[in-house]
Length: 84
Image (cartoon, rainbow, N blue to C red; front, top):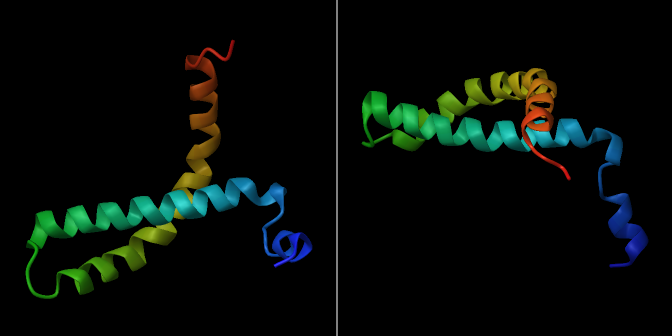
């Protein structure tokens, strides 16, 4: 595959906060869905189906939450981390 084809398949840099929020929300929502479903109803028959149902609700909520919280977290990190 040529370099120009690879570049066309990438999302433009200006969308970085949204791509970050999408992946962060997706991963965290899935992990939390697995843990909460296991804690509430156990890891029994139908576990993955229940996780899927929980994830379907959790993912969009987590995506919106990450978008809202990201600027606050970035300010907190900047205030706490020594960049020099």
